[in-house]
Image 1 (tube, one colour):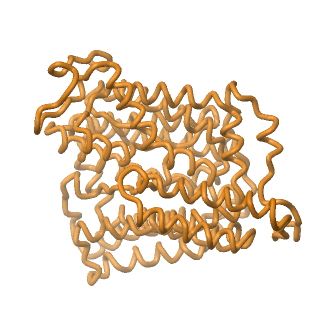
Image 2: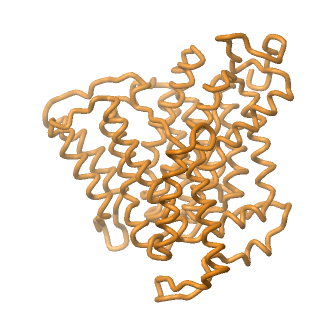
Image 3: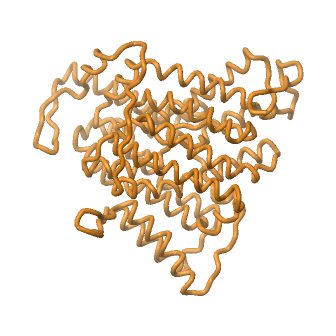
Length: 453
């Protein structure tokens, strides 16, 4: 049952090699502690990605709790997992922003993508998980993940880095050191630590060096690096800034490629949970993807960020051997309560562009290289032109970013165009060559994140 747990042993300790199963729990005080650990594990990426996408981090944290509860109910408590902010939508959202799209347009596009993901989950539930491996084999999923990351290089080069190049450089170096030097929990939040370092450096420079002149769309502007006006106006306790979505077809097309990455993430992460808990999770794979899609749709309906299952929290389970879904319900409630502190969200939203430049240059690169990780783990053969040609072409179109005008007011560009070429081109060339797509096991297309959400 999703909301009923059997006490494990004496509720205090685990015997060597023992685990707390999803439908079990330790004593409630201990479960609160485990729930707090899950909040800490997801917090860095769940806060950083909304900032990069220009969305309210308080709404993102609050709705991550709501999405997690919905997910656990949909999977009937069989798959312990936390749903935090997804990195896969960053490319599409940046493209929407570049086309002068506002937050309502962004969340409207994400909402539709969430519904599409939920529909894919329904199909998997009834047709079986094998259909996903045939449509999205490792060569395709790896390419989509790679172009989502590398396709954002222009954002760093054109928008973030030029605003304050020395702070961006210092933040990049500090973030890299944090990720490499620190182990365990501190290593998992290296991106967040880099953001905090850059923020503090910018504040110190504002006090000592004064204003900076930075390029904008309308020319050069001289100002302080950090503007605390919104922080001063924000309440300590209250609801975050919810907003309704709006829908534009051109924006929706830009974020739909992220659905492919989310499918790969969910399948891989759910398989990992099944392996750790020694249970067959394939019958619940479709439910898990439905849960993620529903979570994304519900979160974006009120201005929140897209969601995905989090490898960071899977790591916490592996370290503690506590797989109880009770810990996730507790973590979700804590996240919802944390979202009721608008002042903290306003402070995080004041992060300077130079700091974002230093953090995202590492973040985007890590996301892109996760695609290569999928290829390596699945031994993708790039001596085969059926693999090399569409994948190479799609990545170049994304990194460009290249724009292809379809009609007078509709175009495909960057990540969206690259994804279509990768997916369509791969299957077209396989058909031309007369080769069927080989079936692979579910665990082979997933990938892990390391403090990247």
